Amino acid sequence: MSLETSGLIADRALLGRTSTAERVADVLRTRISEGFFTPGTRLAEDTIASALAVSRNTLREAFRLLTHERLLTHELNRGVFVRVLTTDDVIDIYRVRKFIECAAVRDMTAPPAGLDDLLAAVSDGAAAAEQSDWRGLGTANIRFHQVIASFAGSPRVDEIMRGILAELRLVFHVMEDPRWFHEPYLVRNGEIAARIQQGDGAGASIMLAAYLDDAERQLVGAYSKHNPSE
Image 1 (cartoon, rainbow, N blue to C red):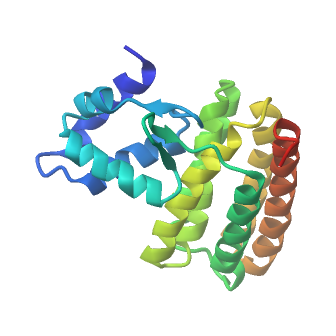
Image 2 (cartoon, helix red, strand yellow):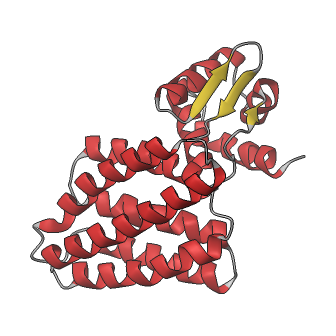
């Protein structure tokens, strides 16, 4: 049994008796965000439906929802695949992130509610790095930025960021050395969290903008190397 399948079996309990396509989509979105499904992976309908104990119709509706979110793609006569993003996708993801994340902290003048969640994401990232768990560090980093977005106090922003950050995980897979990419940003997460803890939203916003510019530049460079024809 594969790691992906065993993980989905464990996720079955999250669905409960009132399983819906939206909940199935949420489980799969989370698995994509955590790096369990890599770009280009074919999602076997029978295997996943069995692992989650849902009908094929429910699963197909979940696939449709995630296709709409640009996380999956359907290829005629071949099936459903985790989407492979392009350089233009990377640029657009970071454009949206800069709008949302910088604005979410810019006007802060005091530590926000939810600060503990932000600090926990930094601590979890440090613990993952100590264990050389680079996928875990990537997951902690994504959670850090989800908390940043939550400071906007908008359920709609939270929903947008869940989709954006799931797409971002698909981008991370292009980095040949995940430690080289993720580890420096762990330090910067701590510095941004410290500014937020001090109530210095303006300072945190400036640091975030530079951080996101640097990450975008690195990822676009990696994509150009892997796909020189783009």
